[in-house]
Length: 449
Image (cartoon, rainbow, N blue to C red; front, side, top):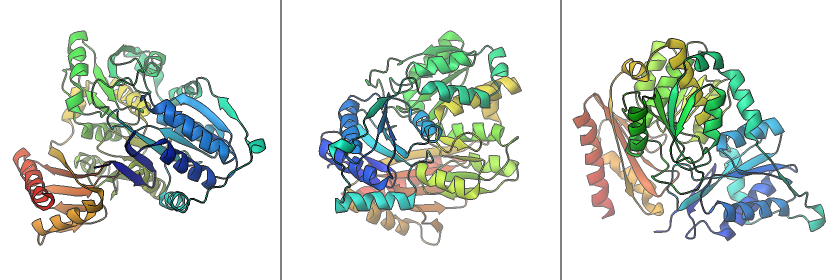
């Protein structure tokens, strides 16, 4: 099965199978054709395929008449911030985020520093499929500018948003695993400027991923061991482009990535109230946080593009997913791991409490996640078939099927990043959540077998 996923915000797949130089050139030409004349930022994470894809992207943008600001290896949140700061036409971030090393992706960013909205994504796909590219003559090629240290302006901006003095006075010792991704070395600098002692692992920026670059408990064993061995107050796990974060407590407990959003929101909403946006697969913990503050919660489709566009429409204070990615009003409309790390440290410092104590304040649910690979052309039809398992139940079909029962919910949907069906269930009872996932998995295996 060849793996290629197209969405409104980008294209991703396995390099050499579906992500080829030809495909990259065509998509980058389509993006360059869609944008008005002006500079475009290009950056990437550390994957071994990055330089090849970057050169194809740069060539395509030059051929469509755009000056290229080359950020080379750079976290996506810094690229998104720089789009608005530099007032450029857009950007392409070359990263597959949480996907394994053999994957890569083009993530298209508009002039607001957000992933493309639904209309922009449709325009891009139309240009790509019609092969209607706007090429310039060589005399009109604007050229390439190699940007040095774009993180400096970003870190200065972010420090002005955080209570750095309180963080510094707490004298935290922090373990971080950037998974040899785009955040490598930069995370040391960021934490150092906050007055925090960093203890880093997998911090070489080599593009060799010692584990899947997905921040979740199964990948956090090394961080947990170091937290316990060094007496650190907290551990952080990043994905390859620094858009997602999961946490490890001072006891070495590896927290589900579902905790990141409610832990930040329950602090931030105290002084910046407003609607809360999340997706249909995110834990009910965030519902409890919104209810505590008397704030509305809106659930939308999975994916940063849907989350951020809904955030802007609703003028929300907090928007995020159970994947460990979130955005906040008065910061930037983008999933930003540096913001998450800064605010977790700020909360611990201001409240003078341990992370484990903050976790105990949240309601306790059991969430179970699984997935099944499926040919792309059958994804949506198989998801629709699972409705037969839940006759008479409350079903939300905004994004796949989300079924709500008396003591559980289960969400079944086609992934936007891989050719798989994801199944997520949650309940106060671990057995009940597992039962729902097992029931759906068995049903899908029979249909796809």
